[in-house]
Image 1 (cartoon, one colour):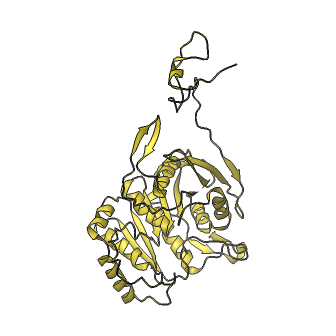
Image 2: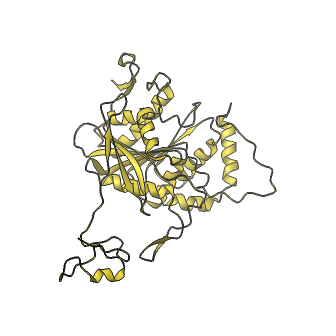
Image 3: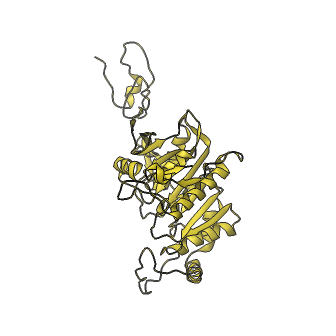
Amino acid sequence: MRKIFVGAAAALLCPMAGVAQQNQSVDPMWLFVPERLDDMAIEATEPVMGSDIPARYTFVELRDGVYAPIAIRKPAGAGPFPTIVFAHMNGGFGLRWLREWTNYGSGTLEQFLHAGYAVVWMRYRAEVDTDFSVPLTVRPFQGRQRYSRGPQEFEDAIEIIEFVKALPEVDADRIGYMSVSHGSEMLMKIASQYNGLAAAVTTEPASTGFLAPLPRDPNAPPEPDEPETLPVNTPQMQAEAVARLRSRIDEAEAKRRLGTIQTPILVVGRDRDHNQETFRLNYELLEELGKLVEWRSYDHDHHGFAFVQRNADGVYDPDPIQREVVAESIAWFDRFLKHADVQSPVLEYSETAGGDWVYD
């Protein structure tokens, strides 16, 4: 019977008499493995509601050895395809979240599929309060790894993007990123440290923490609670709020963080959002730095409106603003991820298609 020898001395031993072998273990200080055991791909494919394009679920090993699930879908054919990775707000909830959003919250992704893009929903760990600007370093410790802090969600996203780039159906030079809210703050963190994205659409970027807020006066009265969607937010009110927010950040530090970004970014605001000044200031600072950035803003009632969900009747029935923002997003990615002579079809809503959102 073959034996496994544990301990540093095991590297000198061999399960076959008289034959010296090298240790092939990823954990050689503690385990002897005479034959290399590579990673095992664990995948599952299942149909997607209302679509003939299935979802393939798999797991990405992150830098600390834990795994994050992703859902991959691609148009017909072998590819390689330009590909968009999607990040929706905060992380957590794992595979169940992916299956729910793939089937009930993928109206926007369906349009990208029709436009010839492969799409990837991803999950990452939940947001933490640790300052992201604290560098993540690693040192050897008892034959394994010891980090200066825990990895954060934006670092998970970078690992996922790198994994996606290696997929045979993906064109590694044509990877985009589309996000909302905290997922959009993640984009700023990602792009400030990683230049592997060809373009990005960042909707409602809740990037207050990234923009280097100054310490708050402990004697100041508490900020009043505001609804997520304000009843009114005129252009003058928005401009005044941006000016107030600018006075409350370390602008030099914010621009230092933004200064390393090379990714072309479309920033999408929401006129009556209680964080509209954050979205706009994020754009203005990028623009002042001479980055390739553009601004759009829409008056919509719902945070996260760019990600179309099924309605109570179980169909994707986007309103005119949602159709417009998705069309603008696809056009932005076409500009950077497709050849100039290849354009996506125009988005149209067809009542004859049983309430489905289709291309005509």
